[in-house]
Image 1: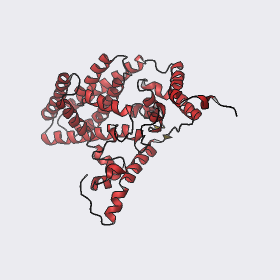
Image 2 (image 1 turned 45 degrees about the vertical axis):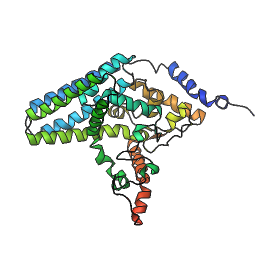
Image 3 (image 1 turned 180 degrees about the vertical axis):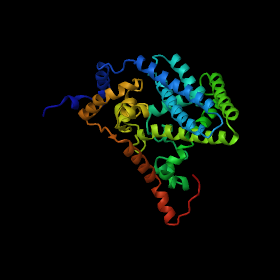
Image 4 (image 1 turned 180 degrees about the horizontal axis):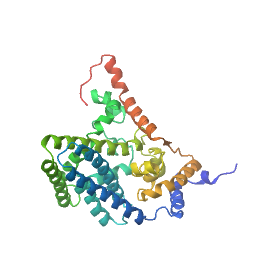
Length: 345
């Protein structure tokens, strides 16, 4: 029997071969011009949004500005994501400096806290014990985690999008907790930048708007920011397999991730995270190169017999919601049979 190259290649060398092909295509090179334009556009949008907020003044039209700034805040968060992965700058120091400006100062989220959390996620995506993104919280991601839970988990698929309205506030709360815990690098600087954001944000709302308008602006802005930010991450891993820890690097990253079809608009709206498989395999790869890497990665996965998941945007949300619904199935069955369950989330 003839042995193919794919059969003689060991699982441990699969990623090395893929890395060689990607590197040969020049897709790991920096894209300074792209990021110069992107960071400039996002910065101008942020400045323009707050300028419009002041010019519109004490008017209910300010809610339109709140919607615009919710979009801009999410785009700033996506830029901070790229900075954390050193896609923009090669070294850590300029990446961290720009990341703290984008995260702490611009949108009120600790760069150090998020980077620590996201690094753990990349190391073990969808791992029940090691990935903080699938750890049990208000929502749970496995039937084991669902045991003993109550109303929220039973109906978490229906509550998923409403709960996203709280994501922005949740990230701010977790940022404050992480900084209070004293484990974040450059803690004093991060606290100072976060305090400037909170004080400046509150002062802007209270000085420019009436109290009722300020409250309405806060609710609309933070709720839509949370929804949009959540929608950029929800399609990536939710409903995908959970690894057992025995997988090699390539399979651990590919099998737990899904890509989302779409053109340049989807790339811009999701910050390139729609190419989640390529991003997890090569987290330092500049965002515009992910689309170019996709056919190489897809063809290579077919060559070595590794499943490569691609779906449409709406279908990706449907799969995530179906998984959340299935996780709560045992709770709903017990509730329907009259079993006594503690009524807590």
